[in-house]
Image 1 (cartoon, helix red, strand yellow):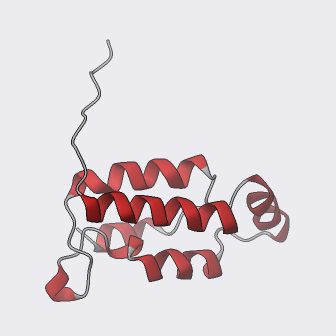
Image 2: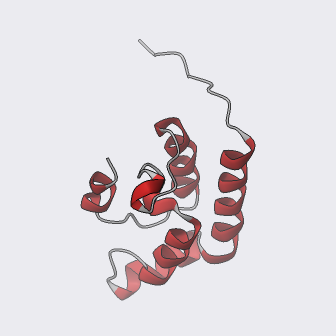
Length: 100
């Protein structure tokens, strides 16, 4: 049994974040990038995650009063989808959990 997909519209700010994420990943990620990480034994690329953090992706769910982006949880799903598209080596789960 499959569940129907939820289509929650994104506002302009959310769409811009998604576009900026895709542009950054087109330039700095992908299959070749993943192979270099794996060949070097790195679990993730700190430089790439630094760039993603500069976009606010590591604090998407964190409230603005605590230095986060303060977006709703439904924004995280398309961002994670794009990260998966580009095979971005994952950040530590504790970083994601800390945003909750």
